Image (cartoon, rainbow, N blue to C red; front, side, top):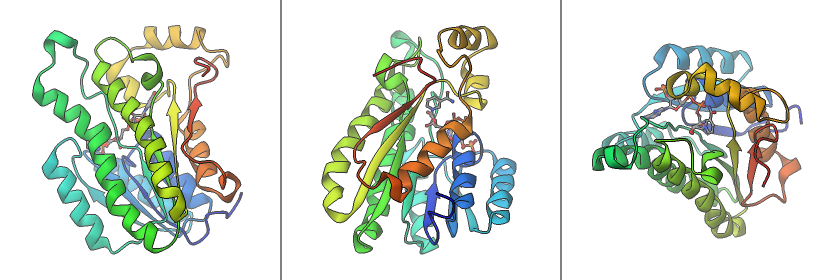
Length: 254
Ligand SMILES: NC(=O)c1ccc[n+]([C@@H]2O[C@H](COP(=O)([O-])OP(=O)(O)OC[C@H]3O[C@@H](n4cnc5c(N)ncnc54)[C@H](OP(=O)(O)O)[C@@H]3O)[C@@H](O)[C@H]2O)c1
């Protein structure tokens, strides 16, 4: 699968760190010729990823946008259009719990922010990118769901979990709609990946409990997920449509 993605143009959202950063670098390492890196707040991170992508031999470009609100989604779509890139590979990865809040504490503003970031932005970015994929008779889209879509998420993460369940459902619906145009739509569903996400929203005690409940005996890595995304975008996955691949060390088996 070495240079399997040779000549492909990829867009990875949330590519400034974590799973998105590892995915952008992995796509370049597997031959992608150009990678567009979306980020929000972590400019230093995206600059480092951009340098890694270029070292792997691909062209790279970073676009900033807060995908948690409508204005940010629209500004990203405009910048993407201005880039002129006809994307072959789209990885809808940007996402966050935003903040833990139980039912009684949840405001309409927080609800909209969680849904905009984790669901609405992925839908409208896909709409924009699919136009080019249809014109080019093909493409691959990988959405990043979560184990939360299966188990409802931890306390205070219910709306995030619902957004991720929507991502898994959207993956199936769009897989059916776009397959006749040569576009494959799939998703990856990480369990607990040891990165900034859990610096923000967990603690070491919770993570120790997760490890003890995980048959593989460790947390996931960004690369565990990134390599699965590369596989889903490759010719080896040519007959895989509408699937959500669980990547969780056996912690949750479907
Ligand atoms: N880590 C896990 O255990 C885990 C498990 C299941 C699913 N996931 C999913 O995996 C995906 C990647 O997360 P990660 O684990 O790599 O976490 P991460 O290291 O915190 O990275 C999150 C990425 O999303 C971007 N992002 C966050 N809020 C944003 C906003 N308002 N607008 C635009 N972009 C925003 C961040 O951009 P900046 O840093 O530039 O602000 C960053 O690039 C997410 O969809 C997450 O829900 C993670």
